[in-house]
Length: 167
Image (cartoon, rainbow, N blue to C red; front, side):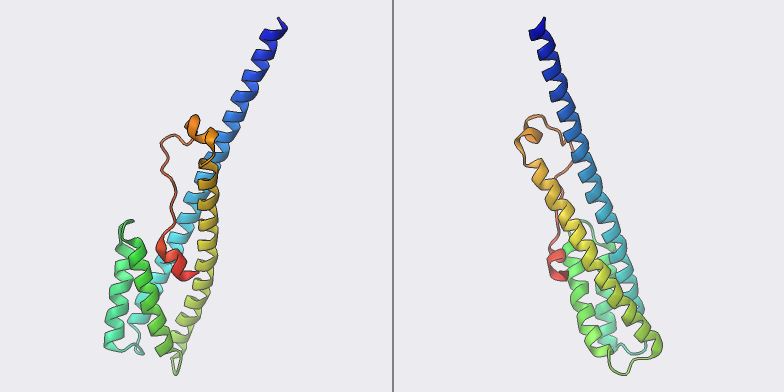
């Protein structure tokens, strides 16, 4: 009788721990998805500001063409090509910002200020996303998560190369 009761208690504790662990992993995956959605929104806003800067009077035709192409490529890139496209936009924005800081009109100065603030937000969002990915990967690498397949069919979260460029 005592052995059966002890066995039931142990099984219940194990099941509770597995349920708790699966819920924790689910929350971590949700955190990765939320952080990516936030980062993606900021990157889309950066591309929109880049287009506004490209169409400003201060941008020379070559810079305007380069920045427009980079912005559209970043906005429309598939997830496979996203890293390359975002790195290209970062480079194009860096070139244009150096050229536009002197003698810009107030509207252009406002766009540059907004871009600067947005870049700071992007750096924070990237740090949050990278942290969420690293924590999720660390939890998923534990033996109990592999043995009991607590991740289910959820893909392993990844970071992108452009995140290293911006940090």
